[in-house]
Length: 466
Image (cartoon, rainbow, N blue to C red; front, top):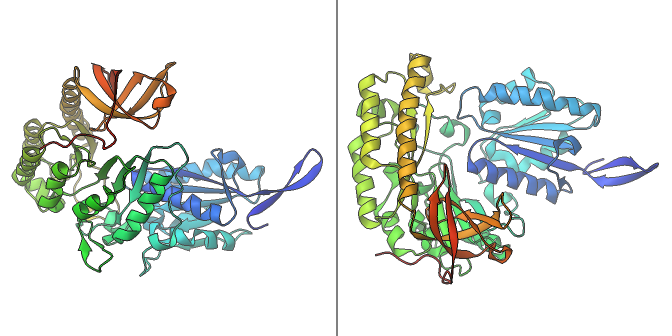
């Protein structure tokens, strides 16, 4: 029945809108893309649901970064297809990077999948849904010449939500030997600056006060400006900072080779750019970095961090690490430990290398699993210690917290500090959506506990630091 269904209620048949359920895996960009797919279907007459059991369309927006991602999707589809006993017209779609990498092989192995749609074809989802069904499966994993962003609905941020993601760049041209992104997301593509500013304004109108700019390699942003000239990420941040009600700007994920001087300077010159930077290094061994095709050395990375901290001493640095990359020796691993000790991270993400089919590193001899696990455990102990030290350094200090939601305890609110720490404090409900001063009294496992300071944060947000 197109975008509606005939159901029986109290002995009579009524028409209700078809419903879509989207489940996201992996990165923040997938969360953003999931919202845009849902928006596209809502525009076509669907209604969103948080319960997959009442959905007429289930979309699994997949991630291909971690090991066994594909097998997990097949298992999930096997579980979901049982819902067809209640709703024979249920359609199941697999989207995202697994869809791009596997294509129609997904439908061959799991006939319950009606639709396969890659990241560059989300704007065509309504058409694919219309074509699918009655035993007909469809797939679209093409890379169109025109950007998908101009054809997807803008972000419909729920009222009352004060933080938002905004994708400004997609794809990557770096071709790290462990990574599938260039193959599943394609070449680097930056959205026009005016289009980004327009969507940011819409988000702010709906209540967003903290926007995180997203991209697989976000600091390579090179979007066209209204005058036809190119805009850097720093240029875009300056433009976005002119939106009065937008109080905080963040960005992720960056590559060290694209960390330009104007972007470093922006951490000082732009009040609204928060002092937190996620800058992956992956390894501290130059030999392994070359094998990864990272195109920077460990010393270049450390010197870059030193330059950034020279301009913004209070910045919190986050990083990514891969241990047991093919060929990694104990000496290579210890060089990673040395780099971590020299940099000192406030937050980090670390993983054992997992081969991704089709990437150059997948064909290399792999490190023994026990060795990989032992190295990861050693690295994570050090990273965890550094995170705790970073958090403890905030005890006794006053930070600015944008309160986002109610906490677990009565009268408790939870929000984020300038440095992206989760902070909870006793506060009244009228503080929701507000930036308030909080004195930190205790460091928890993954958050900070504080008490509200009576003085309200100035309208301009965090003070500028020179």
